[in-house]
Image (tube, rainbow, N blue to C red; front, side, top):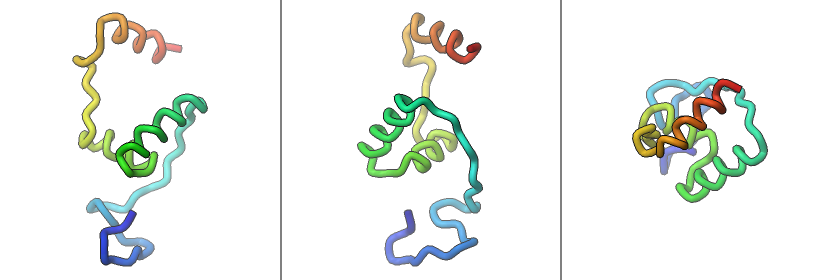
Length: 79
């Protein structure tokens, strides 16, 4: 995703002040489909969605979860 009116150039940052680096994530097909649906609704790629979450531009708030949801997250991360 380049800035409008600018051509992508290899080795040059596009949207942020640093170059992106390749990382690998392992997801279930359901998780990947969910990320794709959210990204599509925002008009961005899955990679850009994760970037924005990591930068805090799309906040994830544990305070918005119910107590049951919060306790289930702990069980999932311990698996």
